[in-house]
Length: 149
Image (cartoon, rainbow, N blue to C red; front, side):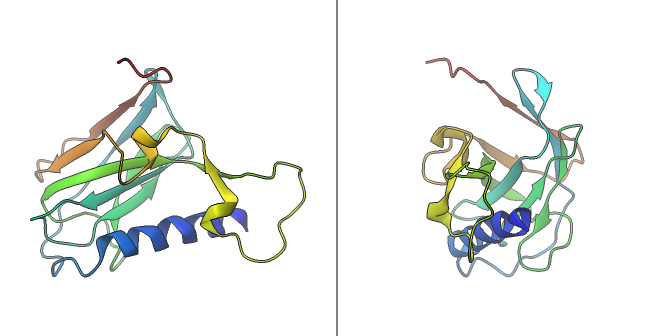
């Protein structure tokens, strides 16, 4: 139940950020792996937000137990994205109230905190980006628990 609610919040945020984007055009496969300090990172959301000039609506996926993900577009839920430049965010929302009680009612964004700092998890502050070329090569997203300055 909570997993669906977290996805709903993330998906809704993505749709707002994508706005009325382009037509979506032709999609190319986008997949890869998220690593934290060199180790596969399971159970995180990976979101691609198109930058100015990139057609399409962006997309999202979730890493499996091996840290691997496949991105599906937000418009039709089909695998792949339009070629172009994207901001990338990685997040794992958890409830702020960790008392163990089930929440009453819908979970909203302000009920969640993220396990990752804004430079990985915020659309406005992310330092992560990727240019989708359609070459089929897996994307490796390397995160560090202690960001080097």
